[in-house]
Amino acid sequence: MRIGAVNYLNSKPLVDALDTLAPQLRVTYDLPSRLADSLVAGRLDVALVPSVEFFRTPGSTIVSDACVACRGPVLSVKLNFRVPPGDVGRVALDEGSRTSAALTRILLAEMYGIEPNWEPLPIGCGVETTDADAVLLIGDRAIANGSSDEDFSEVWDLGEKWCDWTGLPFVFAMWIARAGVDVSEVTGVLSAARDNGIRRLAEIAEHEGPLVGVSGELALGYFRDNLHFALGNEERAGLRKFYALCVKHGLAPAGGEARLASRGVSSMTGK
Image 1 (tube, helix red, strand yellow):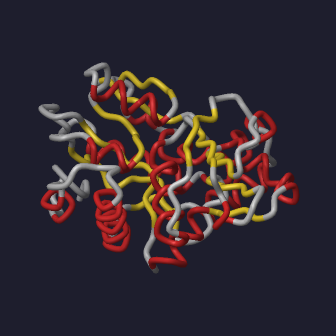
Image 2 (cartoon, rainbow, N blue to C red):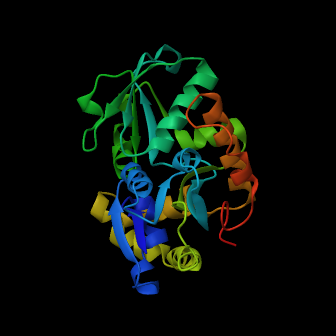
């Protein structure tokens, strides 16, 4: 079984114990956007991918109730404005995640009625490499860039913005399988790895935080206070809301409501 996992700090509690719990699995690490492409291409069987890719991938199934979500500020997804949000004409989007890019487009369209010009912000490039009116940063570099927030006229934490606007959690990434894959081997393992990671948050934070340039204390606060790792009823409601808005704005195909409505292993939860 070929598993694709994300190497960002936010997923460490989900994957820290995978090698121990399931040494028979072949786990590789990459950016969320690249994992989605590898899943579609058949190079992976199961991957932790941006939630918007579940909407865009016919036949894919959610195979665990482990996820990366938030119920308020997420800290690691920031939209940095150089001009007032209503005046934005160009937005540079971090190439690392497609869900955060879709969320950016939805929030600007719904809240300000604008459709700016979009351009990529390549992996490894910082906000100083573009003069776009707004810059989306995700993952570890968004956390590390927090000290530079004063350089912008306004900074949105997209998790906080979504939760305040909808009253629902936001799910950034989920474990999904491509069509035709027998997931019986991994469904329980992925949830067990998450449970193990939650029990060891302090140890994981102390080890992994400094590797990406943040203190163990900040990493622990991020895990404990900003992230939520279980796909519950409220998270499913947030997913349905996000899906409806993606369809409305042409970011995902219509017709996926049945998969989102189901509570079975094959669609929305590993329980």
